[in-house]
Amino acid sequence: MNNRILMAERIRESIGESLILLSPRSRNRNALLTEYLSKSDEAYYCALNQAADLHGFLEQLAEALKDFDPNFGAQCAQAASHKASPAECAEALVADLKRAQPKPTYLVVDNADLLLANSEVGREALQAFFGRLSEILPDNLKIVINSRLLDYQMWAGMVYQGAARIVDMDNDLMLKESFFDPNRPDVAYLEVYGLAGGYVFVNGKPITTWDGPLPRNLFYFFVDHPMVTRNEVFDTFWPNLPVKEATNVFHVTKRKISERLGYELTEYSGGFYRHSDRLVIHYDVADFEKTIESARLNPPTDPNVWYSAIRLYRTPFLYKNDMPWVAKRREQLRLAYAEALIGIARLYRTQNDTERSIHFYLRAMREVPQREDIHRELMSLYSSRGEINKAIAQYEKLSDILRRTLGISPSKATQNLYNKIRAGKL
Image 1 (cartoon, one colour):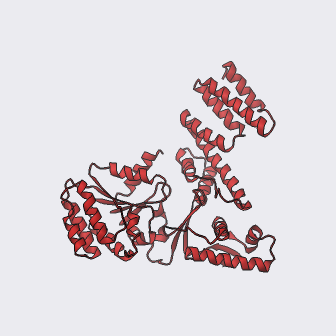
Image 2 (cartoon, one colour):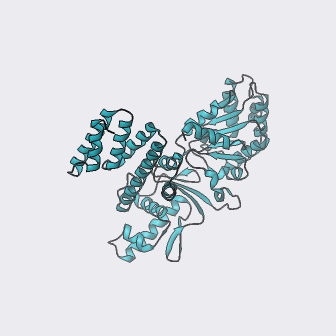
Image 3 (cartoon, helix red, strand yellow):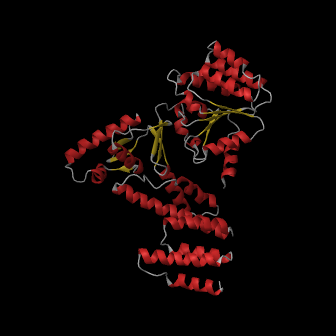
C-alpha cells in the first residue's frame, strides 16, 4: 500500500471523530498534514507562533484565520478580552467558524505543543475547552491538531469516548484501549522505539535524561525481555561482581529508572521480573518481530504484510549502544529485516512487478551482501527486462564481494545462470 492510499485510509477512519490528533511519532506526519489540507477546498490553517494561554490561543487563531475570511474572529476576540471560561471560549470559536465564509471543513492547528509550553496553561482548562468543542462542532467540521509532542493523558478521555482520534501512519494508538480507559487512571502509556533512534516517551512526553548510561541500558534490557530472572540480569550487566555488590547496584539503578519514568517498569513475581501492569507498552521491536513471525507461519499474498514490518525498521537496533546483548539483538533484527525485504521482493516478482521486486532485492542485498540467492534473483530480473549489462554487472559485483570477504568464487548455480545470460539462453 503506497503512502497516499494509506493516508486516505487513515483520514477515512477518522470521519466519526470531531478532533483529529496527528501522532508526533508518525514519520509521515507532515505529509499527512498536507493531505488533510488538500482534502477540502475550504481548509483553514493556523500555525501557532508563540506560547500562549487559552485566551492568547484564541487571539492567534482569530488573527491567522483572517487570511481565509477577513471578517473572522469577532466572537473569539470578545471571549479572549473578557477572559471567558474554557466552555465559553469553545462556543465563541464555533460561532465564528459557523459564520465564516467560505465555510471550512477542516480547521488545522499546527505547532499545538506551544499551548502546553506555557506554564500558566493548565491541562484541565484545555481539556474543558476541547471537550466542549468536540460536543458542539457541526458534523461537517473537524479540528486537526498537529504537535511535536502530544500529552496523551490530556486526550485520553476524549479518545475513549470517541470524540477524538489519534491518527498514526505507523501504528494505531486506538488499539491501546486499556490506556485510554478513564476507569484506569493509574495506567501510563510507554512508547519505546528501539528501531527508531532509541527514543522513549511516557504519556507522550520524552525521557531526555537517564542519569548515566546504566539506567538507560537496564531499561532497554527490561523492555526487550518481558520476563527475566535476576541472575540473567546480573550475568548481562555485572558478571564479575559479587552477588551482594551486584544487588546493591541493581536496586539503585532500578530506582533511577522509576524516577525517570514516574512509574515502576517491572514487578517481581514467581522468580521473574515482568512488565508492570501499570504500564501499557508500545515497543516497536515487539511489533516488528510479531509481524515477521506471522509472515513466516502464514506466507502472505499481500505485500503490505511485509511492508508493515519494513516500515517499523527505521534504524538498526539501538545503533549507538555496543553492549554485547544489544549487538546480538541488533544482528538478529537486521537479519529479520533482510528477510522481510526478500519476502516482499519475491512477492512482487510473483505479481510480475519487476520494478518493485528489484528495488527491494537491492535493499536486501545491502543488508546481506553475501547472499548469492539475492544476486541470482537480480540477475534473472535484469535479464527478463533485457538489461543484460546490469545482469552481468551484478554477477561481477557478487564475485568481488565473495573474493574480498570469503576468498571464494560464486557457486556453480550462480555461474551457470551467468553463462546462460551471456549466451542469451535464459
